[in-house]
Structures are given as structure tokens and as C-alpha cells.
Length: 243
Image 1 (cartoon, one colour):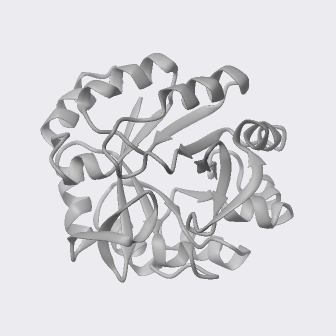
Image 2: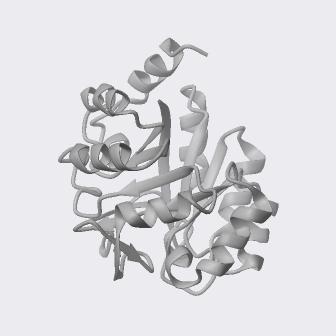
């Protein structure tokens, strides 16, 4: 299972929210590049970078941070937040994203999102399936759609999607443990979904259970920043995994 730390950006700073509520933001570092370099120094290979300003705007905002991290580290970056047009996607890839995550656009403009899958391929495009009460949430989680998570994923699998990031918003940033039942349901009902679990990870001991469920990766945010999971633990875990 891939270990993917998260850096969420507001006003160019590394922050974390609770349940996606922008009013709960806590700044952890004024310089996201420093955070990324620390991850890299502990053997981390992957990074989930989220433009929270872009997520509630109508376009990508913090692409310079993406470019800075991509050029000054070797991290393999998936980038999300504010990707609402072909131009946004072009900027993200030009600034160094290896993959991009589309959530709101997959609901609001499926034709554009399906074109991205066809143009760039399933290795480059991740489906963002962020849920609240098993309904897909959009626009930086400020809106809830009527679409149920499992049919939503299955529909996009039929269009070629392989990678899916699923965050249970009720768990995100709460350090109360991830939605094991939700991930199990998704993995049982979807065909060979490469599911990346996100939200609620609170301790190192939860990781083996996610592996057991069949998660392809897990995104870890606040647990790292609050010292619940130490980078040394993750470094050891990564080094012990078969190459």
C-alpha cells in the first residue's frame, strides 16, 4: 500500500481543516516546500497536494506551490483542487503534477472529465469521490450532490477510471479512525478499483487494516502534523515493503 502524505494549501501555507470546514483551518507551516522536503528526507515517494483556495474558486490558484515542490523534490505528486477546465489541467501538468484529481468537475461537467480520461489516460487522472453520508460532495465540500458514492465510482470505471480517492468528510481531520466499512463496501462492489483511502487516519496501527481491505494507497494528513504518526514509523514501514 502506498503511503501518501497530504499538504493542503490556503494562501500559500500548509494547513489542515476539520471535516472540510474552512473556518477550522490550522496553519502548520508557512512554507509547504519545507514540509515536502521533510517527507522526502524520510523516504516518502508520494504527495497529495490540494489547492483549497482553488477548490472553492473557479480555477486553479496555488500552482506556483506545485511547481516549487515538483522542481525542488523528487516526490510523485497528485494534485487536486480547482481543476475545472482544460487550461487548469494543462497548468497542473506543466507545473509538475504526475496525476490530477477531479471531483467537482466529474459531477458538474462530466463531458470534460471524460475527455480528460481519454486524452491523458487512467494513469494520470484520479476520480475524487469525497462523500458525506455516502453522497458525493463538491466545490471544496461546500455542496452535496445527489449522487451515491458506489454508483458514481462504477459509472466512471465504465469510462476508464482506475484510481479513486475516497474521503469520508465526517472523518476528515478528526483523528477518529478511517471509514473502514465504507472502503470495504466500495471495494466489494466495484471492479478492481485502485482505492486510495483518505480521512480520519489517526494511528499507525490502522494501516495494516487498510492493506487487508485491499486499499491501493492511503492519504495521511493531520495524524502526521499532530505527531500521532511519526515520519520515522512511515520510513520504516516503506523500507520494509517489497519493491
